[in-house]
Image 1 (tube, one colour):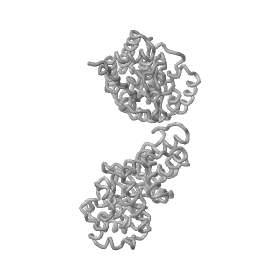
Image 2: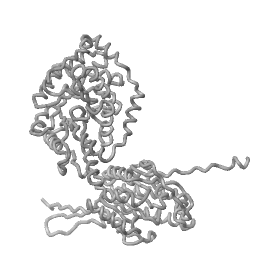
Image 3: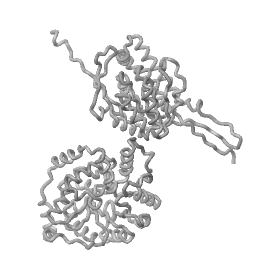
Image 4: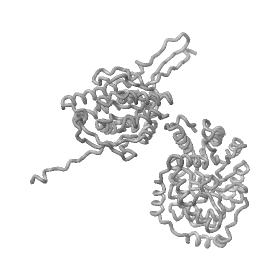
Length: 293
Length: 317
């Protein structure tokens, strides 16, 4: 075999958005260059526009009744399945995380393993949130009084800028496990692991529209999502490094009284997450029911 | 309006079944590929900002807000009428719709609910949607709807007769309903989804116009293929050519499957570019729809506030 025929043309991957269970390009047709930590070109990622954000919200709203109406057990099984699929692609994600964050191979594998563990941990919460956040309340009268946590609705998530996979999983899983549907804006500089996670979600029984993933400029996509009247909550983690932007988005979010989660400072994604995020995106419903005849 | 006799220039074509067939089959054949391409290219026009705001208000004023379900109740019809008169209670600047379209037994209720408002009552008739009934029954159905207060009657043609080539029978039936409808506006539903070919749609359009239709309407909304851009384009060409031939202007109403603002604006572009600006008014172009109105209102709110709106901010019908 000659040397020439041995040289194989490499096949580049076209990264796409994930909206309503499909993989569209940006409506605007725009892309931007994604580079590794050294500035070397990795791929072109779609540069989403506000119309992509709007379409994603429509898809998320459409998926909400089915996902929030599914049994907690079923949601847990579906999310566990995501962890299974992630495990099968462990090597690919390690490569992408290493390139995106400049980690060595070992550290990247550790980050992927922690992300898989995090996903499983949150999947287990699906049928336990009600016991922790709800319960039977003692009242001074002949009534049963029950409080149950219910999902908030469509949640816009600005994913953390620094941690492209572990950070993303740590903000996405707690939103969807309780029955919310999510519109995620990926890390602006390192969107590739998130766009690959979409392929995992698409092959693991997660109904289309439950998770929608957009890559692009956090400020450009954050503004229409924060002002959107049909988004019920927004997680500003991805704007944590830009206080002016976070304040602007928080103000816009007040228009329809969205729930806003605005973390004070950079978070340590490898630490025990606790239930804080999980409980940020549920609403308590309390029911009175007369006892006896 | 008195029953319209065929225009003098075309009087002889309706003299017999054979003459009518010769005339309809003598209409030029439709270039299907060209028609589809023309409709597709007109659908790519970009209508933004102030033009879009104008188009949204025009589209709202052209809607025949429709409820044609077996499960309709007087309460549902009344709430639809209230919505038609004042589509967005929070914004008095929103125009009212053109008409409320109901089954004949609900026409009286709609008339009552719309009393004093400029919104008209449209009632389907003639054994809608299949049209499978004897002529006396269809005529009684029409008279019943008009007596109940319908300002406009939406009739269906006998597709069975049309497809088997008994054109004169269809012609006479439309003319008879035209007479029975008296002062009411007559919209003739061709049910394009059942006519199979573009050529048939062109023939049915001319047949209905010759028989005195005030409007030709694409479909009932009850079959799988409803209003499409090419179908509507073809009918707009027919009304344009009919006016050129006879001097009488006929309206067009696409119905069924128009759900988004984007779709509605495509239809308006089609009207302007095909029939011309004369048709860009609720008197000559209507959109038969129900869920479209909410999407138009959401887009209107978006334009006014800069924020995307959601289904929580419009009524649940």
